[in-house]
Image (cartoon, rainbow, N blue to C red; front, side, top):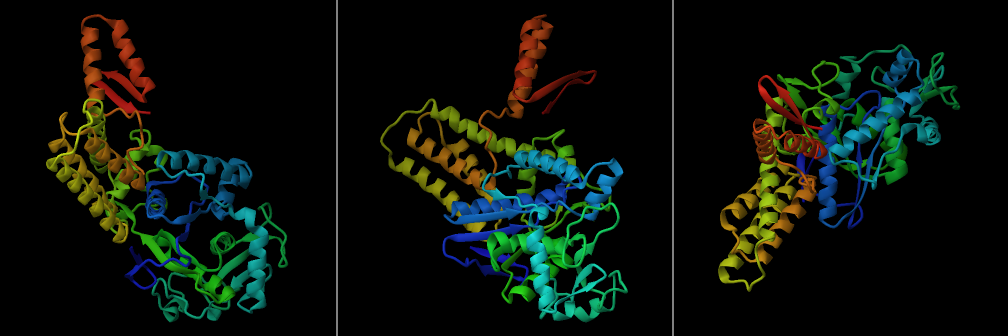
Length: 465
């Protein structure tokens, strides 16, 4: 398997630190609001990488953190008259709801919270102070960037140019304009913890370094996140971690490209973001997962309702292919395989190997999905009620096996658009015949299956709930 390592700017053969095991750390959300589609992309992407490693036989330790103390959390708490913890709990709960819909929530995924590691953060900062790589100014502790051996190696930024203060807020407290805070002195009314430097709270960058170290070790296999985190967040993580331990922080750095709306990066600061909560008002979140995986993770992704509708239709075609095989499984019989049947199996195996080849090539999920479409098209064209049951079952199992890697096609009783439209027409016919009991029964049955009908002057509208 080859992965594109941002650190070296090239694809490299993946070699884990320990044979058969993979340690992964992915930067998770700051829990002050609902996650948006841009936040969802790295979560879906690297969850898929986790799934693929498991498929390949690896034992995976997978960490996605929660930043549960931050200026934005504090500001929201003050605005609403709540504690920072109440705000964090609310949006962690909302994250879990969205994560479940996106196929992310897994009991084996670790979700550490920064505030659970305050003692370890203080110990980490104290270690940097003792190494003379950090300094205290009236309760604010800064990392001294001049103590970092090769600052800028991840983002490829020139430290001399950065030192000029370009786009960096200069503080008179700092020795250098790009020194960054490790421990922040608390203001009146803000949450704080006791430390050797006075009451305060951790800076943003230190949290991930500490949680990664505590859960996965000084050196981890893979650290991942959105490309906007390369600088300063990931660069600063490397600086403080490697200065303290003297070891590489992560062997592979993976970054997904951004999601764009009208050629602008989707972000809260731009005001052009769509929350995952918004999306599930109109679409099953499996559609959003499928949309994200339909492009290579390092390629920019343009978001629109039209693109989601296209993804929905594509996903429905795969579900239809799955249901067609289920239909045939109920109607075919066991019989001895003939040479023509063996050729069918060989073709299915070829598509499976294409899937693996694509996924081994820097997690090419777009072409991986294409391989599953190839299986569906081939089975639709070549399988019938005379095809041996063994061939149908084998193909069906392969589709489930590969789709599990991608986190799709998991709904056992998913109702598809063609079936919905057929039932709507049956309901309309029942109403024309004044058979209101049947019409109401169809509507209630659809509701039980997650479909709401709305009678409008333009006809019947439906949506998933």
